[in-house]
Length: 49
Image: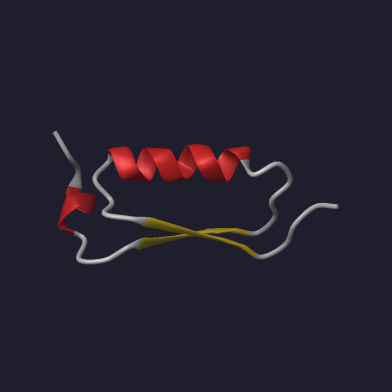
């Protein structure tokens, strides 16, 4: 069963303050897609290295 995200008319903006490897953002985006988000747009405010 899909969650309320399936009712979302557009993409979900996934914001993270600091990204090192990107793995956390990848996992979070996958979970959002599985929950029914039509699309996920990742945005990192800062990158390591």
